[in-house]
Structure formats: C-alpha cells, structure tokens
Length: 319
Ligand code: ADP
Ligand code: MG
Image (cartoon, rainbow, N blue to C red; front, top):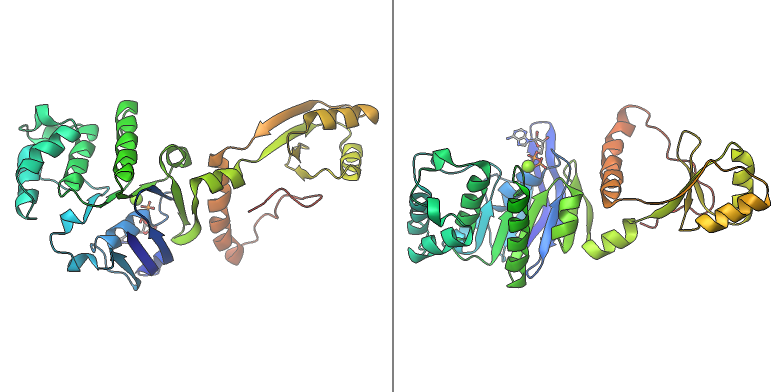
C-alpha cells in the first residue's frame, strides 16, 4: 500500500505537485493518469524518497522509503530515466543491485528469464534498444520480489509486442496480490490496463475512481444533428423534453441514443435534417475534458476563458 497525504512539491515558483492525497491499494493495477507535466514523475520520485516533499507525507506500508530495510524487497520501480551503467552487462547490473540489497544471487537469472533477456544477459547494455532497456529496468524492479511495484510510463517507445507484454505482466503482478502503480499520459493505455484510476492535472487531484465507474460516467452517447432549421428543431426538441447541447458550426448534440425519435419529430414538423448520426464519446475525450478544466482554472485567473457550451434541459454531465 502507498499512502499520500497532502503531498506537495514546489520548484521555485512552480508547484509541480499540489496537495495530493490518495491511497494505492494491493491486488489491483492503479493507473496514474495526467498530461505531460502534470506531476506524475515528481510524485513517483517523492514516493521513492528521491525528491523531498515541500509539504505533506508519503508512506509505503506505513513507513517512509528511507526507513525500509532492503527497500528493493518492499518496492520495485521503473522510473523514466535509464538508471544503469552502459558499460556493464545486464547480468552484472542486476547482480550489483542484488548484492547491495540482500537479495539472493539466483534471483538475477530468474528476473532475466521473466523479462526475456536471458539470451543477451552478458552483453553490454550500451547497445540495448529502448525496449530492451525497459525490460532491464523492469527486471531490476522485480529483483527483490517486492509486494509493491511502480512503473513510470513503461510503454513509452515500445513496439506493440512489448506493450502487450508489459500490460500482461502488470495484470499478473496485481493478480498475485501485489500493489501495482503505473503512470501514463494516455487514457487509451489506462483503459486497457488499470482497475483503478487516479487522474491529476497541474499537480492537482482531478479524479480517484474505479475504472468501471469512470467508463460508466464518461462514455456519453449522443446524436449529432445538423439542420438548416435550427431554431425550429430546438423548439420542437425542447418541447419534447429532450436535452440539446450546441457544439459550434450549427451542430446540435442530442443526448441518449434517440436518433429514431429525433427523426420522427423532425418529420412530423416538416423540418429538414442534413445529418442525424449516433455518436459515442471516447474516454480520451472524457480525459481531455477533465484535464482541460484544470488548465482553464488557471486561464480564468489571467484572461477570460470561453463560456461553457450552451445547454438546454438539465444537461448531460452526470459527474
Ligand atoms: P509528468 O511526469 O506528469 O510529465 P513531471 O513530474 O515530470 O510531470 O513535471 C511536473 C512539473 O514540474 C513540470 O512543469 C516540470 O517542468 C516541473 N519539474 C519537474 N522536475 C523539475 C525540476 N527538477 N526542476 C524544476 N521543475 C521541475
Ligand atoms: Mg513523467
């Protein structure tokens, strides 16, 4: 378990991490989602005691990282930067880590096997591809057989086979009852991997929710309608109690999967339609909406931001 309480990091004027409180639990994959610069890597460095919080606290199974005896046996991490010595072989790199952390030598061969690097174990890591480097980083994280694993953007720069491999590995680690905390700036990636979702934007917590709930709340379906008789159609729909959002270019977005109802109402009132198409908003859009609000929050204080889309009825946002 990883517990953050009011965790904050400032770099001069910049607040990289702003009062974050959440808990990462065992037995599931927790996705840590935010746009580039949101503060994910800084948070992860503070969890590992590599950066000092300006305020707040973070604990691993109730302890600060520095208080852990043989920390690699509690928490294994893959951070963004390549953290090995290029002149060493993969085997020797892992052996050094094992020896300085009270980990039996035989684990080196085991983790090399797990990540599929056995064949190149004695080669210098200088010549490793990005994907091989990621695999070596993951081998180091797994070395101490820790109950907690943390991966910072592990799929960056990997080929589809490597991405699939990492996803499967993270799920199997969680299924073994381990705590798995993984960051990404891609909603699509999280949707495929995470059971739970923590979303941040500009250092602040924006959502802490199960993936199922996030999908449920945000997979909005609507019908896109274009008509040269916009005002008439709006009146008709409004009278029928149908919620409409106007989305620029004269396009109307009508909530729910009611294309037939809209088409029939339009026909009854002899309104011409140029388009009537059911749509499904993507989770990526939901993520953009969520994080756009955190960007807007700052924009509001300096300049005037655009007003929200005009709405009729009781609106479609349920969250
Ligand atoms: P993410 O990993 O979500 O992309 P980071 O944690 O790397 O975000 O960065 C969060 C913010 O903090 C960014 O604006 C970044 O420029 C800033 N930042 C990160 N590390 C430092 C540092 N060592 N000094 C100054 N600013 C930093
Ligand atoms: Mg980062």
